[in-house]
Amino acid sequence: MVEINRVWLNVDTDTNKITLFSRPRVSIHVDEYIWSLIEEHIVKPHKLMRSEKYRYLLKISFDRFDPVRHRYYPLSPYNGPLWEGVKPDSANGWYPREDFADSEARATWFSPDKIWTNCGKKVLDINIDAANVSESITPREYADLLFDGIGAALVFNFKRLKREELDGLKPKIDWSMIESFPF
Image (cartoon, rainbow, N blue to C red; front, top):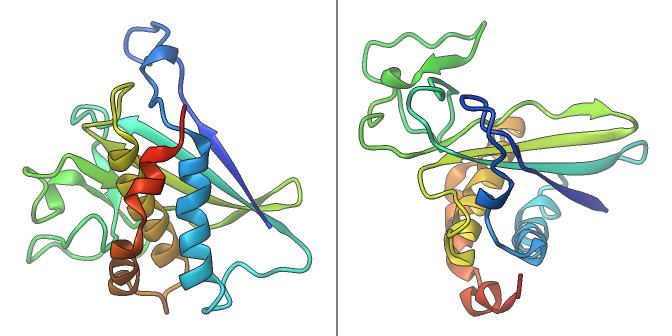
């Protein structure tokens, strides 16, 4: 079984103002639905995230993209390719946003991280920075970002998994179900 936790920062780090009311107004059932779809069609068939010793935790974090604060991202198919001539940095793995080929046009970025262990749980971090993250994001927009965020984290951690496989699953999302969950 997988536990799902949302992490919302409730203080703007630049102004120290409380931002609790700027978080998305989307039901946790959206997160559960998206995860169950990915788990059923990707995770189980590939026999990923199976451990007798540990339980798994999806730690989901959305943040509004800020080009001043969000300057570095890891290499990921979900963040796009690097410019020709940029050397891959295997020691660090994080690149200035300007090193990505379409960085000027992008307003959505993913920061997948390696699965880590905490208090007997394997934690899969799903970090999403997007310009449309606010209290007015629609459940559909939220689900779309979450699907790609989970995909970015899985592809980052399991090299045999490819983005194309997740992209093939995305059209199977039942958008009417997503929009039916009340907040």
